[in-house]
Length: 293
Length: 255
Ligand SMILES: Nc1ncnc2c1ncn2[C@@H]1O[C@H](COP(=O)(O)OP(=O)(O)OP(=O)(O)O)[C@@H](O)[C@H]1O
Ligand SMILES: [Mg+2]
Image (tube, rainbow over all chains, first blue to last red; front, side, top):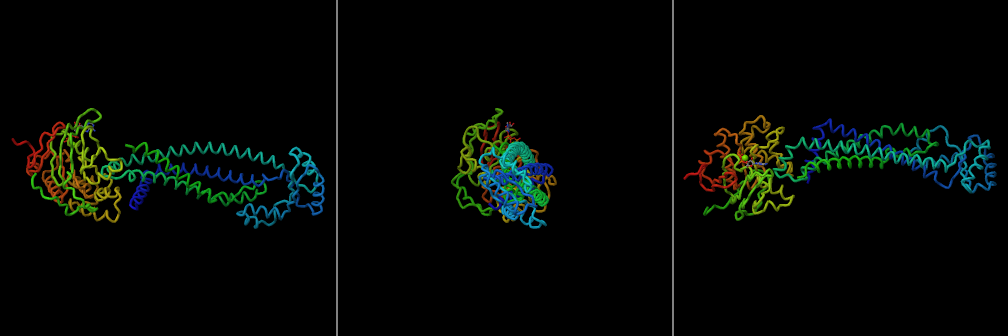
């Protein structure tokens, strides 16, 4: 068993470098696909996380200016309570907003701590009697001097849903095409490897090598392409992680995309599993059509 | 062959120990009414009957195209008989399942007519390859390879590639590779491009020694001088039929 694994790995390694140009081309195409895949996964999971946060009962959010006083807040609360269209009111102070944010995004918490002042605004979150009441409530709020901006959460959610759906459908379609191309390249790479070893395969059969000894080195060679591709992809992601996180931290009150998802364990696992999976599938298909007797 | 001495496989040549089973009772090889017709319609063997007891030494002779290599291909199950049975140590090769074929082949050491040496591997690596691809552990490969290289007298050329060897040395490399598994049956398909007579004698001496160790030997050859001198069993094929099967015989019919 040990001899088998050692033999297969050695042969796979030799095979990979024997036609290094082809193997590296296959690895590069693998990297391209995995970068696309991880980009899509990161974006979609970030958007999903954001969506969960805004998908609460809250329908309208009014962000207050930093200049708003406690007096302004009290007056506004009273005014809103008197409006029949408004059913629930929650006041979120600047401190509370920061605390909430840090809870949701523990990974960027440290970054936020480093900021000179709290960039998050105080806000009122309101639930409405009926969505059509939005116009009335928003008009009222925009007339208040303490209010900076008003956001219709339902509308934002709908827009985000559209974006997510387009991204998901488009991304999966593109990934499917790229994935098939990568598979095709791997099938051909392994086929060339098999042809290069035709003489050895004949001798192996004649001296009584079992099928496993003939096939598994090629499976491992395909897996090696996938593994290399995955490791390079993860390396690239780690490289862009820092700049991307700080970029997102700048925009975090616009779109709180979960920066931690960039090279979270899940993404790394997905990348490795997909890379190795496609590599193995490609070589399996290749030798199945070539080595059957 | 009355009073045949018991077979003694005293010294294993290569790696792996010889299993303690006694195979004397079961012939090493039996062909029963074997016909081989290639897909193109060419009948290379017709109704061949042949029994080779374990420990026997058999010369397979006959003109070019008589079917010698075809017979060998059937024995190692590279091809299946169109009709009839091929039994190797009592096992019907046509009934072997897919997984048993490699195991059967490890009991046979074959020297192919075209040697089938790997051009980019050294003599040592060519021989080691046969053990490596059949799952022998690394620590057992090296001593086994060195031992068979000594047996065939190629220790000095171990690092050379086949292209850097003489024809006889290439053949001895192929013999070493065939021996390294400790086969029960040793088959040599002699190359038609004849070797130097002196070298042929060396190789014959080697095969005799292998046979003395208890290995059954089947050798296809055109070398009339060697066959006649040794007076072993001779099976002659002509146009796919066994036309003669004599022990202690010469290359040509002696009437
Ligand atoms: N794969 C094949 N397909 C069709 N015909 C074949 C095939 N292999 C061999 N033959 C034919 O079968 C006959 C026997 O061939 P074989 O190779 O067994 O002869 P041989 O006795 O080994 O000859 P030589 O002494 O020249 O090696 C020949 O007529 C040959 O043309
Ligand atoms: Mg022949």
